[in-house]
Length: 482
Image 1 (cartoon, rainbow, N blue to C red):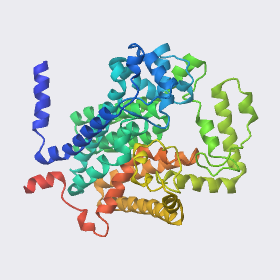
Image 2: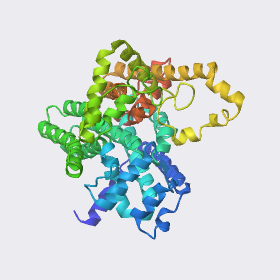
Image 3: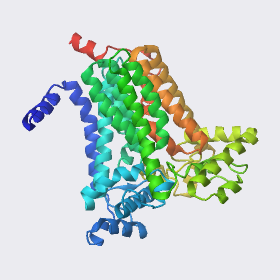
Image 4: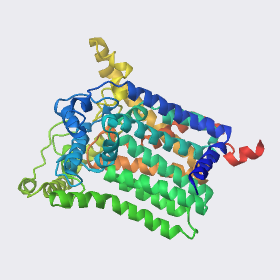
């Protein structure tokens, strides 16, 4: 097909959308435009001009002086990812920079092409790309939701998902969390499409979307492999009976293997040891020990591990620390059970208030939270962090869990694709919580599945007390009626 034919094909795709579908897509599009507007207005250090247009040196100037970047915010580990990116730009793929081995190198690797292509506009390009990807994932997911029996709630669900302050604002932050959340949403939408269409053309398109998103999610955060394996099982069920079922499943499993293998081979060549990253033992040790509460920055870790200190390299030390922490858990079952419960509580804790715990201090929504002005006064601080604030925090957590359970129950009652969506969402949320409980209680860790939990919570809220508000015609049936 020539270039003119391709353009005409794309134009026809948009033209074939119904008025309702265009209205649905308008919501994530509007959110995307607002995010770009905000990104453009973020003031920061002119790192590119200060370095004489040498992007690598300019990034070093920004980091060494602790300046804020323009057109983007720094996430929890933003400086570490940018240090890793600086190492890639300076030394190439096999850079020995510690930030590329201690943390998984996937996120800096994905930022690298944008750094090369856009140079002085690098931070703006990251904000635009991450915002567009989130909008695209949400748009495809919402179009699929509209074709189910909860389609009448699509616009309300769209507002909950697209304009959630934490997800929407963190698309313009340097951090892997929301990009991984976008990957999970897009993979879920692809599975819904395959369940609905079950044709060869759809499988080819959705295989590409699913495969690329799976690779990106795993390479940015390797524990995402657990999410992707659940989604691949759903994929296999969705295309059962198709002649390409086995072949496409093998392809997706290859993607699952390729992403961590890429990180392992990079570290093997750069540092001489086969490891995805070397921070697992440290993370696990923060949440273990007799004088800790399982959360970030609470108490001191005291899991003795002499073998870790005697190790010859970082990967061996990390492996030994993991063993020491696991041994401590088995040797202290009573204390461990309390820690695991605390970690579950911290996972669901609010971003703000007396029960909040985790590494979301840089959450743009938290920084601009309306309660910040309240706690600036002694009376306001006593109110927020006192018994009333604790009661509100617990009400927030319990009501969120209740609504999420209610939303899942509604989808289960419907059966069909709606039940599949509910099962996928709940399974990924539970897996995410369990992996957090195995390491450290941190509310930031729930962001990769926050989009799915928001959908369940919004569904529970919108149908609270009335099952009739949920059950309706599918998109196809509504078109027939018209």
